[in-house]
Length: 395
Image (cartoon, rainbow, N blue to C red; front, side, top):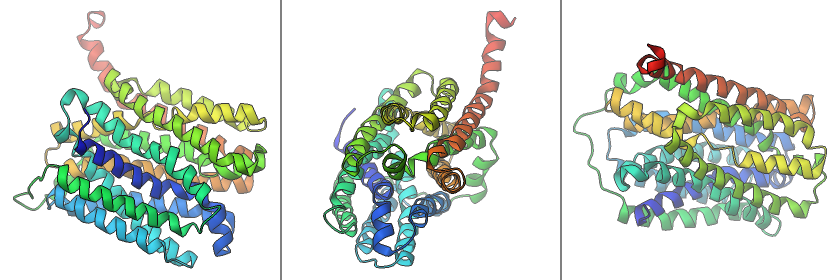
């Protein structure tokens, strides 16, 4: 399963994840440095996610006329420049503009990179390779986010983006050497064919699952640092180690998503999402006791990305079988849905924090996850009926 091409894509998702999630750990530092309210700094996460969701399908549609290899290389180079620019920002407006630019690039880079998975791995290893690509984001949570948060205590937070740029440049060289050099399409893409994906009931329901699943967790996760310090009473020195442990659990979540995909994928996903909704609801009560709140948070870390591999493989399958020629757009569906969910969840968490208090930020998240479970059940209902018709019990 492992080869240099797989390693390059996992490393790429790591730097993308670090760039995206580092904001969770340094929101208080940005608030203090730029002289803005904490909630305004926190909204950088929402704006990033919105730009990610809006830019990913548009750039993917535009880029489908080019070679995937060269398109990915150019996008990664621009991503490097965007992180270099972040090193020089001195105002909230400049930082916001740079984050919007990086967001649009990040989603498309991930979307294009996942389409290489079937080309660099045997079919039997595809769920595992896809899981590891998404696990790169969790590795970012384990290493990049806590270490970045710790570094921000000693050096200006802008330096973190300089390190991200350097790692991205090294990985770009590895990708250029190892990824298959696919040629450009012979004809321009058919926009109507690309957009036909969004008329497919399965695609819309699957995107709804991805959106609600991430929204359900980001109502509280976007504010995990003030939640730990203000509500749970954690010492500031413990925040980075706790984020490190949470990140380790999210690696388990992403690798577990590969197991779920291999065991049945979307067909067996809805009860897992329903259980996740219950645990998020429990978190609202558990945060008033440090160890109980921490235990539930770590458990949620094991579930937060459990849907990733199943949905991404499902989208690529629907594209290949029912909508040929829409591969790049199909690769963009999950990042688009997920980051729309992050934006919605972060905004809902911000509203809950202002109106209800930080301790109750998980409550709207439980509702989002319950909706994700229902949409997933609805998505697979025709498949269950088909199996029932061909089974002896259904005769």
